[in-house]
Length: 207
Image (cartoon, rainbow, N blue to C red; front, top):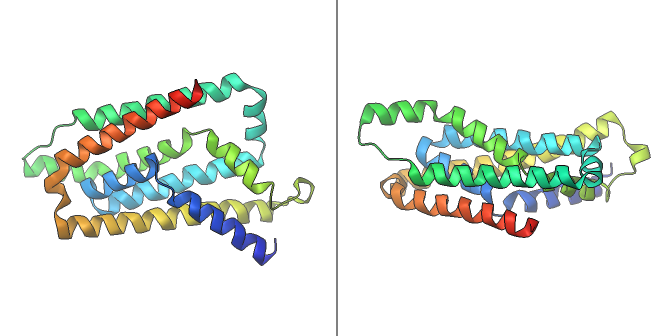
């Protein structure tokens, strides 16, 4: 792949990663509640999910989805259900004043952060369609090699991870300076409502 083509690919991937959506909400939430480590765990796991879709797209997943609309619709419904679940979970969670409970929650939060970071990336089948459309602009399927496929998938993974790690560190730093956790109740309501609205948006677009 020529340098100019790679730079174009990297730019589009960067803009895609920076676009607001449920991924950003998940990373911000865990960065506030669990600190930079939890946010970074969510970021890396999200990048793994996106990178996996990039690899699966090269292997022909998007073609399979396009041939079986029921599969695509089912994945969309699954994604909407998961977003709704996250929204409900956030809205119904109760903050605790116990330092021990708080420390235990923060200590284990990176596992939950990683799971949610990966899932919010992997439940969106539109990602596969996006990568097929994107990759088709830069490569000839007959000229695809293992090294080229690795380069493209690693580019997707690295850019997504770098962007969301930056978001994690920035959010954690803002939390320390502005004490965002003291406004956790309000932030949780906003994020919970955002997830429910995103789930409704997916269903609306499907219908």
